[in-house]
Length: 189
Image (tube, rainbow, N blue to C red):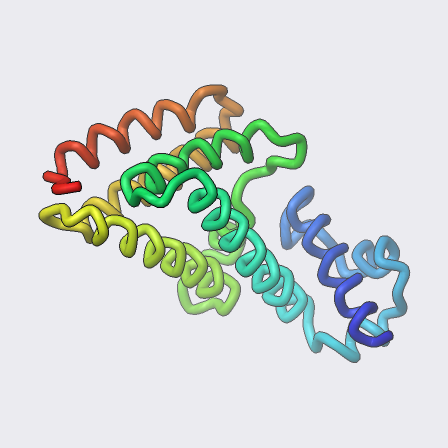
């Protein structure tokens, strides 16, 4: 039972953080919407920051796995997988629940690079770049690290542009730029 209450807190917090931000979402609202007592919260988390970290940890695991699975379902070819990233992003941007990236939002709200929440956001981004790098290395390009950073910049730019401007087609434009970058990188595949 305790685990389900903990999961209920994390899921409720995640939903509210996504909708309204981290700092503007109060503990009492989370407790009310989760239907749990304050003591239940403190049995699992000493602070709101610990709850934020738990929500980010779950979202890191789930979102990264979802993104990788979606890319890999589209192709075994590393070039096509890298390009599929932008197709998957396009679907995400068009979804009713799209509110931007929780990790970008966390890094913005907790701007100190030493803050554990900011570090969790940075770690998430780095771990996904590692996946992109593995795909870029399979392409046997001259500089897979540089290609990875360029694709990651396109991805982050597309996410923020879609979040801030709500621009349609932004993922497609980022995909076209990624195609140009991959071709220019000297792919042997």
